[in-house]
Amino acid sequence: MRSELNSAPEKMPKHVAIIMDGNGRWAREKGKIRTFGHKAGVDSVRSSVAFSLKHGIQSLTLFAFSSENWGRPEEEVGVLMELFSLVLSTEVKKLHKNNVRLKVIGDLSRFDAKLVQKIKKAETLTENNTGLVLNIAANYGGRWDIINAGKIICERVQSGELQPSDITEALFDQYTSLAEQPALDLLIRTGGDHRISNFLLWQAAYAELYFTETFWPDFGEEEFQLAVQDFLDRQRRFGKTGEQVAGK
Ligand code: IPE
Ligand code: IPE
Ligand code: MG
View 1 (cartoon, rainbow, N blue to C red):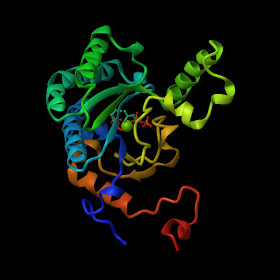
View 2: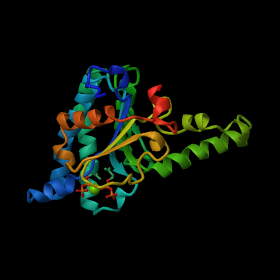
View 3: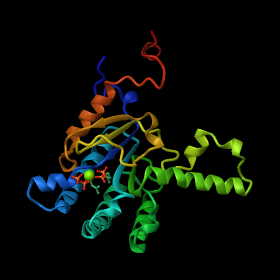
């Protein structure tokens, strides 16, 4: 049976992540330089936050800059950093007003000190907000996230706070970037490619994957709705049989 949006709030995804891809190709198709596409992509970020707020999604995790994206031309990396800083300046107040808690996940050690300061300030301002959690993945890599958790756990074992036998999936999860947030339900990738590109490797274990050809700057609330509708029409089995899940 088809679940309509809003009619089945208990079935709505609690945690959605998006690989915001296709900015460069979107710009090229319009005869513009790639960075024009990155700038246009900011509107889609606003739309996806608005959609999440409207539909009570608890966590939205956006892939903004991967650990591999440093390999792009220096000028493009520079524009992306400036844009990140600019968006923090212009959007944080509005996010705060909407009760959004902002969190930046990734290895911040490679960012300029001023940018890190700005990130920390925004996180502190919004840390007690109880609405949507907006995670921005910047200099993020799924492998980094797993190794980082492993390192902290090793330190705790070395200091005697933890025993190797304490290490369960649930404990390991507590040391990853999205600890204490709902499990990832839906992972969307725009831009037509069917790959994870080192995004949420640990967290995507049982996420539903949704791919669309639409380039990120064209991904608005209607497109987000199509992805959620597709999610609602699926049967999540978690290893069980369809009959078991349907209770037949
Ligand atoms: C995604 O769009 C944005 C970032 C990776 C920062 P791209 O810049 O990868 O756009 P395409 O995939 O080249 O079109
Ligand atoms: C993934 O997109 C990273 C972000 C969206 C930030 P890429 O465009 O970098 O991915 P690949 O390299 O084509 O897999
Ligand atoms: Mg790309």
